[in-house]
Length: 296
Image 1 (cartoon, rainbow, N blue to C red):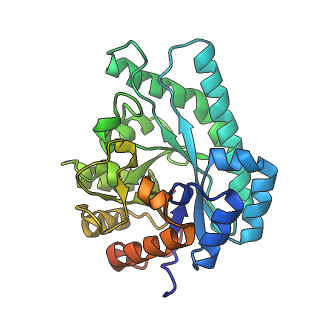
Image 2 (image 1 turned 180 degrees about the vertical axis):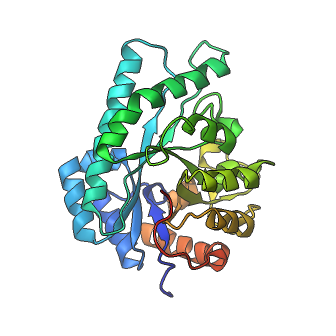
């Protein structure tokens, strides 16, 4: 296998069943230099141990998934959600400090769906704004970027009332781009007729905190959450989107994040090798040669 592109990062969701130590080892053994982690895996190991394992691996840290789920009415449950997000901010800062040079303190934020019993999607979106305003000072103090991720509209009811890059950018606008940015995830935004002007806007505002790639192929799985495919296996225009993100000034790691039961049932080393193959064929060819981290 050829040396993978240096900007490829394996999001841990791609090898969901591998414990943290194994995920780090498989990623490193494949010649990949960066990884995005998930909080459940970090917490299973303990944060200090996760930081030690990450440091020993020599890998860069590209993001932590995830914070958010803000769409809870004020009360005990919302306070608990805010406290959990503050813990996620602390975890992100610790892991970024533990990773190899070039690691970044990016916390991916999923907004949350419509509150149970409600039909007020506009009100739910206002809850997201209020939560960002509350958490922004904590993130700024910790040197963490809250990266708001719009999700495909099919998830609006239960996972994310933020469905477009424009909506995410509008929510981020009141805050410093070092504190609140956005995620461009091809699976979620490829369909959007405003995608390319909004990527250009995100670049002008220096808001692109993370670029994630995976493919869309129909028919979708019975559980639509598990419908992500290796880059190149579906219909997404990786050439156009990658060039647009690159032109917008994003020069950071590019995560492959796959939720797919068949992929999860594949031996992790095999899934990582297949990820490298898809990334090289569909994404690498469209990357230029920007130097430095231009996200901020």
